[in-house]
Image (cartoon, rainbow, N blue to C red):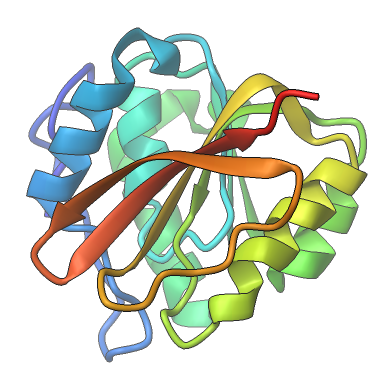
Length: 186
Protein backbone atom coordinates (compact mmCIF):
# COMPACT_ATOMS: atom_id res chain seq x y z
CA UNK A 1 0.00 0.00 0.00
CA UNK A 2 1.20 3.49 -0.82
CA UNK A 3 0.07 7.07 -1.37
CA UNK A 4 -1.04 7.26 -5.00
CA UNK A 5 -0.64 10.96 -5.84
CA UNK A 6 0.15 14.42 -4.53
CA UNK A 7 2.93 15.72 -2.30
CA UNK A 8 3.50 12.35 -0.61
CA UNK A 9 3.21 10.24 -3.75
CA UNK A 10 4.86 6.84 -3.40
CA UNK A 11 5.22 6.92 0.40
CA UNK A 12 4.53 3.53 1.89
CA UNK A 13 1.57 2.89 4.19
CA UNK A 14 1.52 0.24 6.88
CA UNK A 15 -1.44 -1.85 8.02
CA UNK A 16 -1.93 -3.52 11.39
CA UNK A 17 -1.65 -7.29 11.40
CA UNK A 18 -4.77 -9.42 11.65
CA UNK A 19 -8.06 -9.31 9.84
CA UNK A 20 -9.83 -6.57 11.78
CA UNK A 21 -8.51 -3.82 9.50
CA UNK A 22 -9.38 -4.01 5.80
CA UNK A 23 -7.40 -1.36 3.90
CA UNK A 24 -8.91 0.13 0.75
CA UNK A 25 -6.98 -1.20 -2.23
CA UNK A 26 -4.70 1.22 -4.08
CA UNK A 27 -6.67 0.87 -7.33
CA UNK A 28 -9.96 1.66 -5.56
CA UNK A 29 -8.42 4.70 -3.85
CA UNK A 30 -6.94 5.92 -7.12
CA UNK A 31 -10.26 5.58 -8.93
CA UNK A 32 -12.20 7.34 -6.15
CA UNK A 33 -9.80 10.24 -5.96
CA UNK A 34 -9.92 10.63 -9.73
CA UNK A 35 -13.74 10.84 -9.45
CA UNK A 36 -13.53 13.39 -6.62
CA UNK A 37 -10.95 15.49 -8.47
CA UNK A 38 -10.67 19.09 -7.29
CA UNK A 39 -13.23 18.57 -4.48
CA UNK A 40 -10.38 17.30 -2.35
CA UNK A 41 -8.33 20.49 -2.51
CA UNK A 42 -8.57 22.53 0.71
CA UNK A 43 -11.22 20.14 2.09
CA UNK A 44 -11.85 19.33 5.72
CA UNK A 45 -11.83 15.52 5.90
CA UNK A 46 -13.28 12.99 8.35
CA UNK A 47 -12.16 9.36 8.08
CA UNK A 48 -14.51 7.80 10.62
CA UNK A 49 -13.31 4.18 10.52
CA UNK A 50 -9.68 4.98 9.72
CA UNK A 51 -8.03 1.55 9.72
CA UNK A 52 -4.70 2.62 8.22
CA UNK A 53 -5.69 6.24 7.62
CA UNK A 54 -5.05 5.73 3.89
CA UNK A 55 -8.15 7.59 2.67
CA UNK A 56 -7.56 10.73 4.76
CA UNK A 57 -3.81 10.67 4.16
CA UNK A 58 -4.36 10.37 0.40
CA UNK A 59 -6.67 13.38 0.60
CA UNK A 60 -4.05 15.35 2.55
CA UNK A 61 -1.38 14.42 0.02
CA UNK A 62 -3.69 15.76 -2.71
CA UNK A 63 -4.22 19.11 -1.01
CA UNK A 64 -6.92 18.67 1.63
CA UNK A 65 -6.49 21.26 4.38
CA UNK A 66 -6.82 18.99 7.40
CA UNK A 67 -8.27 15.68 8.54
CA UNK A 68 -9.62 13.88 11.56
CA UNK A 69 -8.96 10.13 11.53
CA UNK A 70 -10.89 7.92 13.93
CA UNK A 71 -10.59 4.27 14.89
CA UNK A 72 -11.30 2.36 18.08
CA UNK A 73 -8.62 -0.35 17.73
CA UNK A 74 -5.25 0.23 19.37
CA UNK A 75 -3.36 -1.51 16.55
CA UNK A 76 -5.13 0.61 13.92
CA UNK A 77 -4.31 3.82 15.78
CA UNK A 78 -0.65 2.79 15.94
CA UNK A 79 -0.65 2.18 12.17
CA UNK A 80 -2.45 5.49 11.52
CA UNK A 81 0.07 7.40 13.66
CA UNK A 82 3.00 5.74 11.86
CA UNK A 83 1.46 6.42 8.44
CA UNK A 84 0.58 10.02 9.28
CA UNK A 85 4.15 10.69 10.43
CA UNK A 86 5.51 9.08 7.25
CA UNK A 87 3.16 11.05 4.96
CA UNK A 88 3.01 14.45 6.68
CA UNK A 89 6.40 14.68 8.39
CA UNK A 90 6.66 18.06 10.21
CA UNK A 91 3.16 19.14 9.07
CA UNK A 92 1.52 16.38 11.13
CA UNK A 93 0.46 18.46 14.18
CA UNK A 94 -1.36 21.15 12.21
CA UNK A 95 -2.95 18.97 9.52
CA UNK A 96 -4.27 15.84 11.24
CA UNK A 97 -6.00 14.88 14.46
CA UNK A 98 -6.09 11.18 15.35
CA UNK A 99 -8.74 9.92 17.75
CA UNK A 100 -8.92 6.52 19.37
CA UNK A 101 -12.65 6.25 19.98
CA UNK A 102 -15.83 4.51 18.96
CA UNK A 103 -17.38 6.38 16.03
CA UNK A 104 -20.32 7.56 18.17
CA UNK A 105 -18.07 9.07 20.84
CA UNK A 106 -15.84 10.58 18.15
CA UNK A 107 -18.79 12.31 16.46
CA UNK A 108 -19.89 13.69 19.83
CA UNK A 109 -16.38 15.05 20.44
CA UNK A 110 -16.26 16.93 17.11
CA UNK A 111 -18.67 19.66 18.17
CA UNK A 112 -18.38 22.75 16.02
CA UNK A 113 -16.40 21.07 13.23
CA UNK A 114 -17.77 20.82 9.69
CA UNK A 115 -16.47 18.43 7.05
CA UNK A 116 -16.44 18.65 3.26
CA UNK A 117 -15.48 15.02 2.73
CA UNK A 118 -16.42 12.04 4.93
CA UNK A 119 -15.14 8.48 4.51
CA UNK A 120 -17.26 5.68 6.00
CA UNK A 121 -15.67 2.25 5.86
CA UNK A 122 -16.74 0.33 8.96
CA UNK A 123 -16.18 -3.39 9.31
CA UNK A 124 -18.61 -4.92 6.82
CA UNK A 125 -20.51 -6.70 9.60
CA UNK A 126 -21.51 -3.28 11.02
CA UNK A 127 -24.20 -2.54 8.41
CA UNK A 128 -26.18 -0.32 10.81
CA UNK A 129 -23.14 1.92 11.40
CA UNK A 130 -23.45 3.61 7.99
CA UNK A 131 -26.90 5.07 8.58
CA UNK A 132 -26.27 5.69 12.27
CA UNK A 133 -23.09 7.65 11.53
CA UNK A 134 -24.82 9.72 8.84
CA UNK A 135 -27.69 10.64 11.14
CA UNK A 136 -25.34 11.49 14.02
CA UNK A 137 -23.14 13.67 11.78
CA UNK A 138 -26.20 15.50 10.48
CA UNK A 139 -27.65 15.99 13.98
CA UNK A 140 -24.33 17.48 15.18
CA UNK A 141 -24.17 19.84 12.20
CA UNK A 142 -20.86 18.26 11.12
CA UNK A 143 -21.67 18.01 7.41
CA UNK A 144 -20.56 21.04 5.46
CA UNK A 145 -22.54 22.46 2.58
CA UNK A 146 -22.35 20.02 -0.36
CA UNK A 147 -20.44 17.48 1.77
CA UNK A 148 -19.47 14.32 -0.11
CA UNK A 149 -19.76 11.07 1.84
CA UNK A 150 -17.89 8.05 0.48
CA UNK A 151 -19.19 4.74 1.85
CA UNK A 152 -17.31 1.53 1.12
CA UNK A 153 -19.22 -1.73 1.51
CA UNK A 154 -19.50 -5.30 0.28
CA UNK A 155 -20.92 -5.31 -3.24
CA UNK A 156 -23.44 -8.02 -2.41
CA UNK A 157 -24.76 -6.24 0.71
CA UNK A 158 -26.28 -2.82 0.05
CA UNK A 159 -26.61 -0.74 3.20
CA UNK A 160 -29.70 1.28 4.04
CA UNK A 161 -29.29 5.00 3.43
CA UNK A 162 -31.37 6.99 5.95
CA UNK A 163 -34.00 9.53 5.01
CA UNK A 164 -32.45 12.89 4.31
CA UNK A 165 -29.58 11.40 2.30
CA UNK A 166 -29.25 10.15 -1.26
CA UNK A 167 -26.78 7.76 -2.86
CA UNK A 168 -26.17 9.31 -6.27
CA UNK A 169 -23.43 7.07 -7.65
CA UNK A 170 -22.19 3.55 -6.96
CA UNK A 171 -18.92 2.16 -8.27
CA UNK A 172 -18.05 -1.52 -8.13
CA UNK A 173 -14.53 -2.89 -7.76
CA UNK A 174 -14.62 -6.68 -7.55
CA UNK A 175 -16.36 -7.63 -4.29
CA UNK A 176 -16.29 -3.99 -3.09
CA UNK A 177 -18.80 -1.25 -3.83
CA UNK A 178 -18.34 2.41 -3.08
CA UNK A 179 -21.36 4.68 -2.79
CA UNK A 180 -21.19 8.44 -3.16
CA UNK A 181 -23.75 9.99 -0.83
CA UNK A 182 -24.92 13.53 -0.11
CA UNK A 183 -27.64 15.15 1.89
CA UNK A 184 -30.94 15.23 -0.02
CA UNK A 185 -32.12 18.61 -1.26
CA UNK A 186 -34.97 19.94 0.82
